[in-house]
Length: 188
Ligand SMILES: Cc1cc2nc3c(=O)[nH]c(=O)nc-3n(C[C@H](O)[C@H](O)[C@H](O)COP(=O)(O)O)c2cc1C
Image 1 (cartoon, helix red, strand yellow):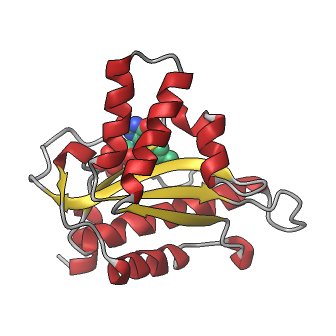
Image 2: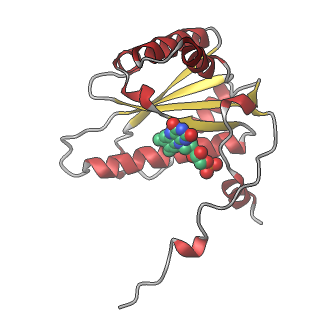
């Protein structure tokens, strides 16, 4: 099979507990961002941006996650688990959407499609470079403190991508759908 297609067909998500050092460095993060920029994007609005959390910044994100967990009423075990989610992955990339809601040609749903396309390209590029990762959101994206920490005016906190080197092979699981379930010819 063609190598590029093999990469697309073999990508899978891998959670933080299966990710080890090293995470993507600047060169890899540049390539992943380049790949995101190659996704379809009506009007070339680039309605997204990424914020990289690594090194000592992981502890700060852990503290911010812990604060959010306390605001959500979690007990101390839950708080510690949320903090660990930020500290454990070698690299966490915060995904932010920045839609132009008043755009005369490109409605919001098209800009969201562009955000999703960029995210898919970003994750596929990480996979092509040998990294594993998983996109996560959860109730934390609606936490006012975390939103204030990352979002500029009008931006949406989409979530976090945990990234690192896969510590294990993917587990086998049933396909979410068969290819023939999601396309068909148009007939009357
Ligand atoms: C925007 C977005 C947010 C997500 N948030 C979560 C989440 O909070 N928790 C979770 O378990 N999966 C979440 N997922 C799904 C996983 O990232 C992953 O796609 C899913 O587990 C299926 O695995 P696969 O990517 O290997 O097909 C999210 C996906 C997207 C695109």
